[in-house]
Image 1 (cartoon, rainbow, N blue to C red):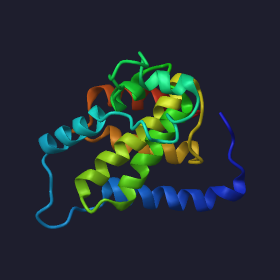
Image 2: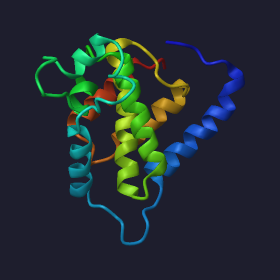
Image 3: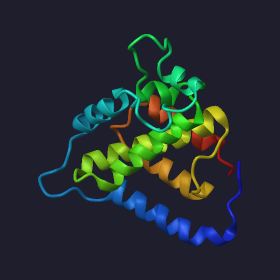
Length: 174
């Protein structure tokens, strides 16, 4: 794991906490509160989405394209869920998933979408940590552990994502 230079820690912690507060802990607009069932269904939609073929991650080298399209001539694509949970997902694919969901978390007008996109964002970071022992974030270990802990407390989080986030928490240095 890469160490973060101490000069960045103060700014990073503030931005991490602001991001978490906005996307995970913020109060929904009046009349926008989603039930756990609705949140679970929305998360399932996000996880079931196909990895976009026009993205920078899959427009590159052939091995990345073949990961998303296992049989390059076949029309089948891999879902976000499949990419997050597969040990052989290339880091650029996880990076693209992370960045796409970070944009949604930062721009969506829907509180529920921001929360779900944040969960997928952190799941991409967790996947890189667990399966490739790579850091895809500048968050400190403590800030990342805090964010993962807040997400693990969400009752609407899919069991397979909970397991992934728990594994990522376990590999973070104490």
